Length: 276
Ligand SMILES: Nc1nc2c(ncn2[C@@H]2O[C@H](COP(=O)(O)OP(=O)(O)O)[C@@H](O)[C@H]2O)c(=O)[nH]1
Ligand SMILES: [Mg+2]
Image (cartoon, rainbow, N blue to C red; front, top):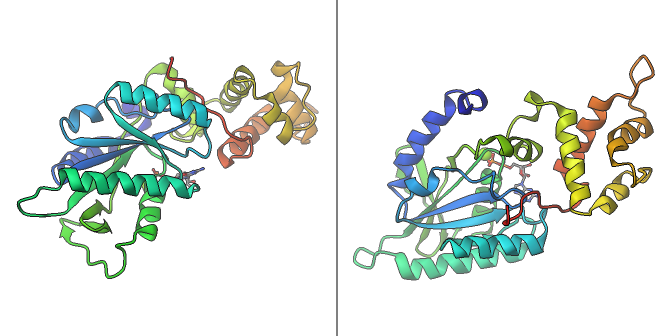
């Protein structure tokens, strides 16, 4: 199963991650706040064993804030530090930097006074590169940065006494059966390998279950809210997605729904609850 999605590259990424972990004091695990269960790597917690770790519920601008707060309590009950994060919300950054300053104070090995070192890890498309670029761009310690070199990797000074590894760790997601659809709709698995209309039907019913038909109606103002099973058909028909035989092109309608979701045009939604 794992190999089917990530041929070869994941084993290599895992070996590299194990090497990088030896160099850091703190691991920042990015989860997609819309699917915190499925975007968690099942073995990372064993690998970082004993090390300080922080969960960022990333892309928090796309998920429901009340549910993100529930997830944070959920992780706190497991004794895991977690906070919401979005590169589109300035407040995220100040919380994160505050956390780092506190850790620097608590964890930085006193005797040699070397910097606190951290790395970012997460599944494909969760926003690792975007986050690193954003942190580097917003870092008050950026000016006059002279990164030290560690076997092809670089340390970037984020704050006084805090350094970030420039390359993120790539993890595979939770690949259990029930995670496939959630991962594919957020773009963590190649949607093209799956049935587009199955994916979009699943997504549309998630909006209905979460009582968010209103958000669908905003984007597709012609939908009849009482006919959820016809949504895809209506979308295709009204957008003029027709096949030669005059039938609605459901695959094209499905692809539109998925791309509207991924671009944020369908508004905020969380697809996995802590109670699951
Ligand atoms: N809405 C939203 N999108 C984000 C955020 N961070 C990253 N993204 C988007 O997520 C997609 C994947 O980001 P990328 O950094 O390439 O992911 P990586 O594969 O983990 O390195 C890109 O389209 C980013 O623009 C965020 O905080 N909010
Ligand atoms: Mg990347």
